[in-house]
Image (cartoon, rainbow, N blue to C red; front, side, top):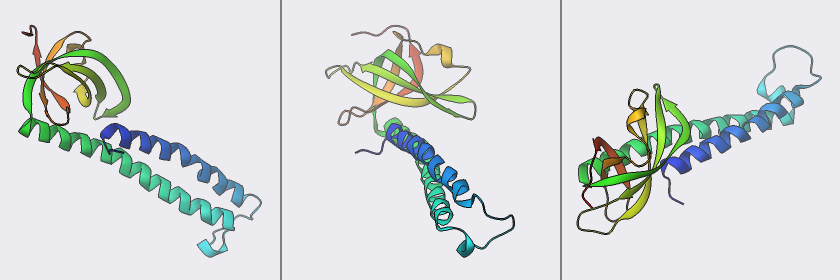
Length: 165
């Protein structure tokens, strides 16, 4: 399994959903206890296990979500520095459900058309400002930086109207 941004984000959502199980059992374990403050050792066993599981799942959720953003950023920087440029056609656009500082994390399915190599399809995700979201439409051509070994690509951002194929 590769730890790409999509996989990390999915793992983060799974941990977030699973986090509700110990959250609920935390209150079930406390049911019927008199009001007051308790040391950890005085809590019922179910509540102790629930607290530990809750902290672990919360931490994993945070790590996976932040990890997806960091991985995406470092991958893009590496492609911009070492990648080759080529035109690409947007085949599909999809929502990832993530926003960062009022920018959408958008997924793109691309057909990359290098000059001296065969065409290939790839997917990429990147942050797009709400002000620039209209620039990215299915069928439009964009300039990408890509890695010829892994076929990873990232949109550089320059919109091209015509592409020589």
